[in-house]
Amino acid sequence: MPVPLIDHVIVNARDKLDAVASRYAQLGFTLTPRGHHTLGSINNLAVLGTDYIELLGVPPGQERTDVLDWPAGLNGLAFKTNDSDVLYAELQAHGVPALPPQGFSRPVRLPDGSTRDAAFRTVRIEREAVAAGRAFFCDHQSPELVWTEARSPHANGAVGLLGLLIAADDPGDLAGLFERMFGDRHVRRTATGCMLVAGLATIEVTTPMALAARLGSAMPDPAGRAQFMAALVLRTVSLDQVWAEVPEAVRFEHGLLVPANAACGAALIFRE
Image 1 (cartoon, rainbow, N blue to C red):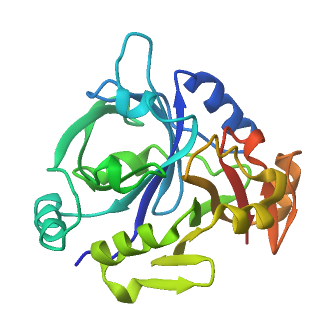
Image 2 (image 1 turned 90 degrees about the vertical axis):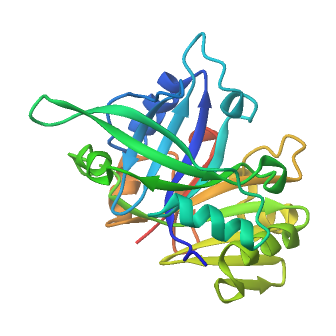
């Protein structure tokens, strides 16, 4: 069975990627140049150590319903894989509702001025199985091209993803799915939900009431959803850098918190 490791997370900008990218630059992230997928979507990345945040949008005239049908904000979780065909067979064998691998690419301009195509194959989990957002595995065919784009450090000191917080009326649904995807040993049941241990990161699923008690007004608007991705936990080399770069940050637990309404629908928790 696959080992859970986060490849990237997605903030859905819908048709407002310019505004979302501008806001994340103001939050101290260094973004890659605008990317154009062969599927029709566009993106900017905040590339971290072994993972990244993808700001994903759709340009005028494109009908990416898999992007536009979701609310704006945090709504994508991609796990790593290095063999999408084997992975797809394994997921099917364990009763995971996965779709066959899908290939696409986008051009990347290299430091020497040349251009190469960064290619990807993804194995998506059917939408009905994860109401909180898009969940899939990403098989990078040319990973060096994605991380080549990370040419400058982030002013807020961000260096990696430490976790993701998901609200769910019934956390047991996602707990069961994670157990079928990765096996019991990576999933821990808690008093208010479950945790999926993904390398150094933790994906925590809890009830909306419990999460609201923790995040308060920093939580994104549920908008009537029974499941939704609420917050990212990021490692920074210096909380002082976050404090200096992000006026909206407030002290939270052992770090700093940027409310969802200041980060385009994704609460950001920074820890050293």
